[in-house]
Image (cartoon, rainbow, N blue to C red):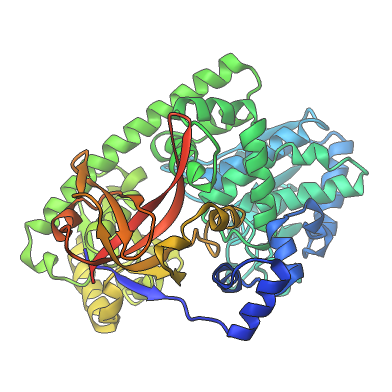
Length: 567
């Protein structure tokens, strides 16, 4: 698949040279910093040396005073408290962190995770009824609740107080809860808006510690769980999230909680863990239980202390993840075959597929897999409770939620945001929905965004690739949304030796630029088809990231190629 290379605009040369002198680094590295909003020496100091002192005062968040006071009353009056969380990674880490920390101060805690299939997302009627049955006086919802208007009314009718800790956008009407903690509330003055759900819960506990003169180190002990939530929920790695991810990764690498250590072991992870380690190895295993069975197994793992327990629970999660992968692979193959068998679908501007026996827990993943093959807005539907229900995934630059909303006459319910959404409709409406959605996409989507984009930070010669520059780039981590690992392009490079194909799908080359001393090893994962383009006498351009490779104890820099174009 062809890709567009979009090079970031350059900054003012005087600005670059001034900051270069202040930081004693070259202007190319300064360019990377300016792209990330680092404009002064003080900005750079904060960026490169994250400090827990940079965490904001939790009492700046609207509702925090009320929430902390009510939590203190419940703890010290020995009231029963239910910690309620969503079934994804953000939700289960939120519950595990709060349950683990508050367990030091109360023996009257319980937690509740809704069933994806029988209760669905968010605060459920069954959850509120369970709280009533168990004599709960306070529910703390995590990573959900901001739109739970009816469920808040139900809780109030049972004289159960509700504290909502959420990070999603509020609707037009807010729930009548005792306190709502959500930095995205229109009138909330909290200075950082992009916390994960677990991050909002963490701020509540930070406020609890400050109110009761509890050493914050006791709370920071749980930051490995917070880092897992930040990475898995794909929130920006900026500001306060950067600080929390930085220290959470330190904890994850040096002294993770027993449950996370067991997951690291079954994942086969070695060496230093980063955001990608969480996104591709740890997060999917935690998520697998909620996708296929019930997410309480994940909370049991993350709150367990006994190594024999954590090992057993980790094996359960690992097995569920293997099962999830099998569903993912088989359904993706079916979906792609359906497209290939239909000439109209092959040339469409959107993909909408329905099959009644596809597993509901993986259809969002399948939608993303289809986008990897056919880069266009995609909706995958299956049957659940005699309805067609599905997940939508978009491409950069197209608002899929808006497109779905234009089909609302065919739907029973839908919700989501610009890049992802969920929807439900009568099965008989699927053909009409497919047609209408395709018409909307075809009439509104710009042709150029149907070609995937690679955002390039800098154009450099290959001699930029050295340990002096790499040491600065490495300190820019943790990498993630809004602070991605830099991508470079180098032009007019050529092969030192013939290209090799590794494991039938990866490209391995040794390259150089004319007139330069060094040659560079490079790997292009999934780029085996590019080998046919590369001949020893041809010049070509590459887009790549710089990585450190270790083999038999020897470390060296290599290029991770993202794309190749003939010069």
